[in-house]
Image (cartoon, rainbow, N blue to C red):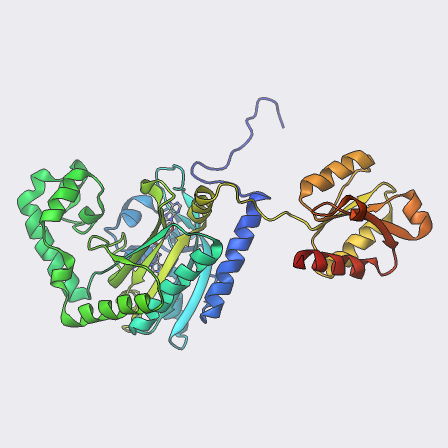
Length: 430
Ligand code: HAM
């Protein structure tokens, strides 16, 4: 590269995830896959871009994300697409396209793109783990979806999580409430913050999300959502919260929780971490969207889901327990001073038995290879030197938790992969 050319950087608001940090991502995704599969959700993979209408109609043209944050582009055939700002609308587009049998329960791991002001925990490309359950209005599925999130957070090791839950009612309750709120705000608009004084007529519910004291105090005096719920919506809400209590999942009602997309009806919920700064403490959120399938061209079909940002989860874990370290990248490190094919062969034998193996390259000195072995976090170092090779043996050195006299010993090279496996097993059980 010409000296005067500047090297490229990742785009503003995005980040590279490199090893060993990426090990935590692998574990988190694997855990989510496990928890979701246990509840009958199957993996779905959708395109990263869709016709822009999927999101405009899906999440609502008036939502902040559709108005200000979407990455849209025109392709070479003049089609207008958008990078997905979230997962739900694409999953519903795909449901309408393929007519799967219901209830249809899917989980995903996807990048999401939003042109936001980047800061810690807020990115222009973030990554969501989520589930969607389409085709039933049964409150048990609301409980099940919330329980998947809760179990996942707990199994991940998060302890300082709050669940807030609300009901927005079905479309009629919601419209009644929006009308009442609009009327109230019309009369008190001079008390709103600058932004919402401008926008409350087109985006009335957003005023409830505003954290500024002006808006909070106005809306506290105004009409409250629970007073506008019909008997059926109230009953649905009680069935969901009763179910959560039966499962021992702690919850609190937040009557201001309306969430940022227009598709929500009835149950809405959010998980926040007490360990994170309040501006970016939402580690997951979701709710019912009983009209979205219809809005995207399907038959009326109730549905519910949630999404959780992996970056926020890992920040919350770190904030709760800064000392937690990632899993080492390997269990066995092969130190080879002969530059022999045998190191390669033994690594291959162990790897095919499922053991993670690292080794040094470039014929480094024994001392420098041993340093790398120590740093790798491996439990065992295998030494292949001249003496070992002549005797048809290898040296096994325990790098963790052994008395001096047991630390290092020789074994026959033949059959050594299985012996090493057994030893690792024994060490794991101690
Ligand atoms: P959301 O609340 O916009 O909901 O995003 C879900 C989660 O993604 C948030 O709770 C947060 O953890 C993470 N997140 C959102 N934006 C960012 C960002 N800029 N940087 C880092 N993390 C972020 C949805 O997207 C809905 N699709 C959830 C859903 C699924 N509702 C029903 N089904």
